[in-house]
Each structure stands twice: as structure tokens, then as C-alpha cells.
Image 1 (tube, rainbow, N blue to C red):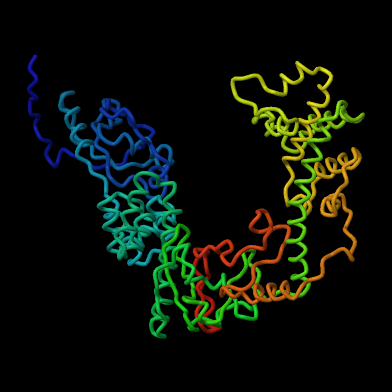
Image 2: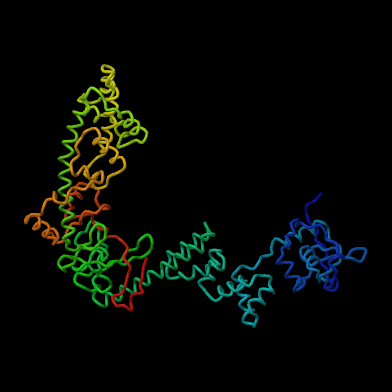
Length: 527
């Protein structure tokens, strides 16, 4: 059998007739297309306009026709209930091979309109007087897509994006917004390719960043015109250049926008993780008579008499605590050397274990080294028997005393100069037990139990004390007085002593709102 296709006689123009056929009555010939792909927009188009392009058919013996090319149009016409279909009917005379070849050629070489051609056609319809809704109905598209397509047709940059990168109309329009920003445009193209669901979010962030940048550029232009000096954003450890937020006037009032352009004023701009920031700073602020705020952010003002008295009490009680601690620990050594433990020892031990009083868990990790010290035993060493256990083994009658030493050592180790200032429930229970066991609490230790010392026992300030307080309050180092003792700010021995001139530095990198120098220009705010 030969594979050669025998050419068939061409039908003369007189042999081909154009007629309308009923889509319900025609017979569809065998076709190389098995997936007809009848889409809703296609059916809607035929419902509105009917079948425009005639199908190709051959006459059948019973008066009906066989459709060789156009089965999608026939099936869609039936769905759309537009049964009258134009058809070119040509005389039968082909072989099956010729039919297949024609069907392949007809389907293979059809090319759809590309998006640029499509939007150009929509634009022409608009120019001819059709509105977006009418165009959408006519071509079976949504009004939103048609509107975006016409906008693309009006924008050469967007049209190029559609043609070159195969992005959607909306994406092309967004990319066109950044025609003058190649990096932003490329970022949007990458998002459209790799993560289209995030495209709108990325585009909006880029718009916001551009807006911030424009605000900053306008601000820089204004400040440059007014002669303000721009600097690099100061380092966090720069003590000579501080932000407005870290400084006050000598009377403790905020610098505020009114200080823009004042002595030592500088501004800086940076591109931070959350957008552009404009910071207002003062360089060599001490020379301008400004004050640095305290570590807690409050103004650094001269001390009142009450604050001076509070500080003297703080220092005196801290010193008294150091002395009392030595006396108390010597008493504990004597107390634990007794032959018998006090009657309520087991209760104290049980509370300490159950409530984990003091630093009992920490003492365990150190093998109860402090307890061994209070009992006069050798220091515990890893890999060897604990001296406490060895002492119990050789002196079984002292088991309760050893356990009491463990509980006492845990409570004692948790005490410090902070204890009289901020007594905890554990500290109250511990000092109450000591008093009941016969220990004479000093005045500062009584404070733990809520017993204040007699007023007449408080030391009167000397002229030297007053002079020292005044010097510190005046801030001879240039930064003003160290902060008076306050519960929330006192956590170290250095703070107990009243702090130093170089207290915790304020973070020079804190975000500052960018404000123009005049009240009417204070709308400028950059993240």
C-alpha cells in the first residue's frame, strides 16, 4: 500500500456552495481533534454573535451534511441555542487520507491573537464609541480585564512588558509605574514569574518605599536650602552626637522641633529595614548647655532635698548591710556548731525543699559548698564523697543540723544589698526564723521585716555630705546628676552606689520622626 496521497480534483467555484445548516441536524465527521475544549466564553460569544466563520462540510446521501472542519463551532452553537450555522459545502470525492491531512493543516497552523493584538483591537473598539462593558460583552471578557487591556494599549511601556515577559495586564501596568527604577521593575518581573500571589503586596511595598524616598528627598532639599548640615548616622557608641530624644534643655524640657537649626544641630538619613529614617541630632551637645536624659528617659534635673536624703539613706544602709552580713554569717557558724538543731528545724528544712527557697537548686549544682563552709568542713570536690555526707556518716546525730545548714546556706546565699530594699517572701521567712532562733537583727536587717529604724537614729547630714550631693546634682562631669535610687533602676552594686556619670547610654539609633523646622511643615513623617 502506497503512502503517497493522490491529489484530488479541485472543486470549482461553481461546485462550492455557501448555505446555512442546522447544527442539530449535521453529522460530525471523524476528526483529529479529540478534545473539543468548549469553553464558556466561546459559547457566550456564539450566543451573542452566532457562528461567524463558516464550517467546512460535505453532502451526505440523506440530504444532510458531514462537517469536516468546525466541530467546536457546531457543538458550541448547540449549547448556545444558535442553531443556524453557515457552511461551505463542497462535493464529496476526497479520500480519508486527504481529509485527515486537511484537518491537521487547518488546526496546526491556526494562531491565536497575542495579548498586544487583542488589546489593540479593544482600543479600536473604544475609539469607535463602544464602552468597556459593551466591549466585554461583545468579546466574552470581563469588564475588569478589558479596562486593564485598554490601559495597557495606552501605555507603551506596559504593552512592551506584556509582549516581552508575558505578564498579565495588571502586572504590566504595575511594572510600568517603575519605568525609571530598573531594580524595582525587575523585582516585580521576578515576583510575577516565581510568586504571582505576592505580586500586589510587592508592588505596594515598592510604591510606599518610593513615596518615603520622595518625602526624604524633599526634606533634604529643604534642609540643604536652609543650610542645615547632614551627617552620617551616628554610631551607637558616639557620646558626642546624640538624638533629640536623648537630650533636654537645661530646665528639663524637650528639645522638640523648635531646636531644628539650633546650636550643634545635624540631621542624618538612612535606609532602614522598615523604610527611610530621618534623625535629628545635636553634636557637642554639652557646649550648647543641653542635658542628657537619665537611663530611664527622665530629664536630668538637680536633686531635691528629698532625693539627696534618699541617696544618703541608700549609701548608709548599703554599708550597714555589708557590716551586718559579716556579723550574721559569723553567728550562723556558731549556731550550726551546736549539738542539737532547734525544734522547728525540720519545718524550716521542709519549707526550703518544697518551696525551693533561696538558691537551693543552685546550691545543689555546687554540691552545697556554702553549707560545708558554714559547718567548717572541707570544700566539696567532684569525684569524691561530699564532706556533708561524710560528716553525717561519722556523726549520725548531726543529720538534722547538716540538713538545716543546707537550707540556711541556700537562703543566705540569696541575700544581697538588694534584700533590704526589695524583700521577697523567702527573705522575710528567713530573717523571721533567724530572729526566732536568737539572732539579734540589726536596723537594716529589720527593714526586711518591715521594721523601720527610729528616726532619731538616722545620721544627720554633714557639711561634707551636702557639698558632695550638690556637686553630684550639678553634674560636674557635664552630664548632670546620677539618677537617685529607684526600685526599677537599681539592680547592681554600681547603681547602689548611685551610678556614675556614664550611665547606660541611650541608643543613638532610636528612630526619630522626620519633622520640618516650622510648625506648618511638621507633617513629614518617615518610618
